[in-house]
Length: 356
Image (cartoon, rainbow, N blue to C red; front, side, top):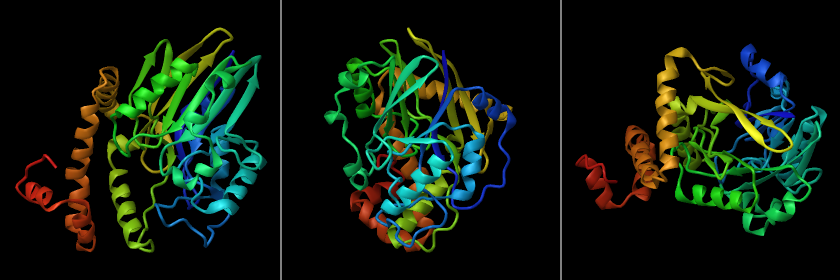
């Protein structure tokens, strides 16, 4: 028997964390054989002067590695759109810091890590591999795309195969068609469990042919940046928008799942919601239980019924409720307004026509 916990995005941030981890959560994690998540930033002793400013850059200080260790992480996936934000030197340092902490990085074909890894524990052979669909131009030289991967070959001599995918629409609780069609294709090819990340909110989960697909587990440890005035104009706007969206309850709730693998099958023992007021997760407060139950119902119903139009409607809701008010409140962002929308769309918005 192999007891595993899977979480979503881990990004402890550039400032030292002063919070204490919740004991209830630590107990679950300490009792597991494996704890696996997605490391959403490089971990460095100091930020390099060489930063990728073609996108929102993220990094975390090595002072926070002790917090990650307290959660008993055994493996962290490095295949995402932020792992290369400080380029090769910082990726090297990240791998070194993880190795010193006895945490195995995987998901990229780089240096001492591999896109595909085999974990042998308690007599069970678990294979893990990762792909990234988000801003993949920055890391595409470090991993194979799904179409290049022979799933049947990976599955040889394994009891189970787990796929980690960085995908989906940012801040959108509803999945898109490409996510679901790809997930089901992967299971048809032999993948046993799919763990999604990137949207920074939870998304629904489903069972397809007896196998689980978790489209997004949301954020687990995460520190949104509070200062962005030093960033280039376009990145400053993107980061400002992100930080506003991070204040929504959907972004403050994440999931972790407890999975028990036996030789012949596996069981999802629990899908557990957590809440972040700042950086570290705590058990979901009782006051948010009804909100979470409604959120879970809507997400899972959408996935079960393949209602992709709800994904598009959520994009429009985010645009109208968050993006446009931000731009209109800050004149410095007006050029972005005109670059994003046609004249006709602007007229419709002024008339309060929500069909943008």
